[in-house]
View (spheres, rainbow, N blue to C red):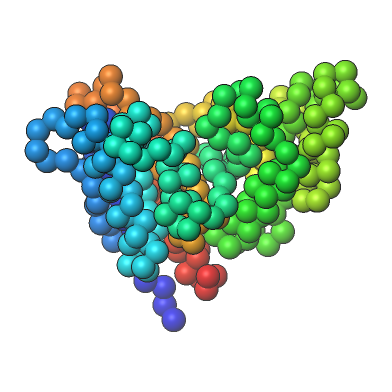
Length: 286
């Protein structure tokens, strides 16, 4: 059966930020998909609570459309976590919010730009809490979700995973901590992944095509690699959901909102990747 054009639901995010602007700009060029815009704000300047509610309701509407099969993928604009919390949506981020909507299922956050794909083992936590939250079980779970997504959405038959170390030089034989040997090595063995490999080389090796994805133990080590590699073109993908979700890798940028100068590159990349993954999913019969 011939593939049909993917159907996307696009939630613009916080109406006070650059979300509406970058969505509008990103859609100026033709996109091989049917696009449905959800969310937004039309009646004056919203309060923080109103903005948070509008953003959350738009994202939830998009997710419900995907769960019902009315769209093939969703793309979400940037949100403000304080506004979401003010509106009663007390999730660390949209990744966790979508996991809740889908039935409190395990998910993982992937950031991708070009040939680099980075999957975060922990996300929105302080560095102190993140280090304490990195367990063998958590790494293995993120790795399995990543492998499944690479196979089902990207069509990679045998994904090559690498595990980024937690400590400098992967602990240097215990001189800089035993976390890598005690926690990460068993996880790498269970996943048949390379590593743990030092953070100062593993992302370069991935950029050169040695790995299909890198598992990063905490937020900033993974995010920094992605943004340095492709600032303005990075895309956030939520893995593990029963539907495809992408979003730009930037925030609401309140300081430039309404000035017409926001760069829509990351939003355009998010739309294009959503189309790519939805098309691949159709061809793979998933």
